[in-house]
Image (cartoon, rainbow, N blue to C red; front, side, top):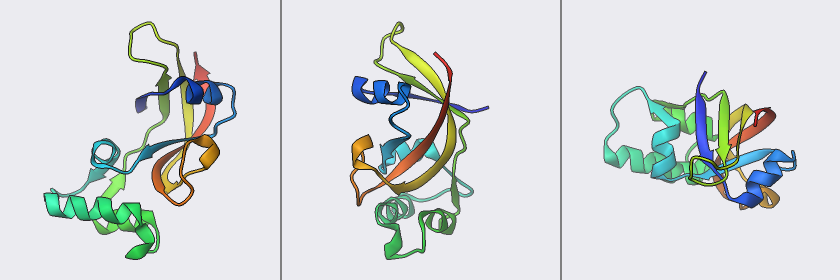
Length: 130
């Protein structure tokens, strides 16, 4: 079982806890890509940068984001749960939630995404532990 730890601002933390927000987004940038993507072979910096650029507009050169990642010999890591925390101290509010899906897709504005921008997207399931 793979658990991902993520920190949230209070607004998003509360919306997820109340069941109002059904997806969590992370921008497609080097920081998150290195945590969410696994590659079969050693990619050089130029190939990595090209993949990240293409992921921000995947339909430019590929049919879909999944095809794009496979083209570069990579895949998305699989996570079972996310532990959301509201802050960085030891005693902050936190809860575990199941993950329905993890993919690259556009965001929903009400949930913090920009409509025409691609994100690493976690579909959120039920709360497992608070």
